[in-house]
Length: 123
Image (cartoon, rainbow, N blue to C red):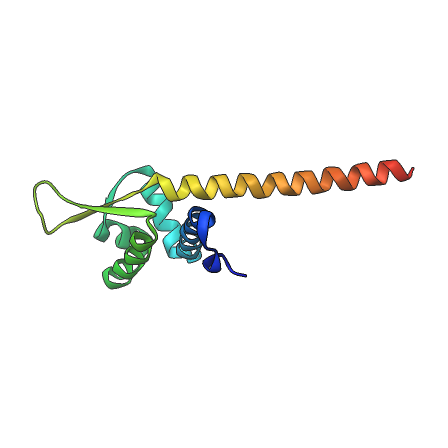
């Protein structure tokens, strides 16, 4: 059964899993990861990001669209020029990702500890 098949009280868990999937999918591309790294330092305009990363403005626009749809990046208008868009990171998807990584790592630690205990009990 997939996460999307879950019904009832586990809907919140399914929604969290869907958001995590979207975050991971959006970060799968190296240009988008580099974009996130740049936005972690400060907000940028699309043109700045494209020039720094070395992609065309059109390509950057497509990457930013994926990041916006996943919720990793948010967009706002420049105060002086409404045509200019400023992009920044949204912390919620990264917090969900960090929490998932922490849970996954703890599972590995628990399994390795159980394996060690098993090996020690056989000695």
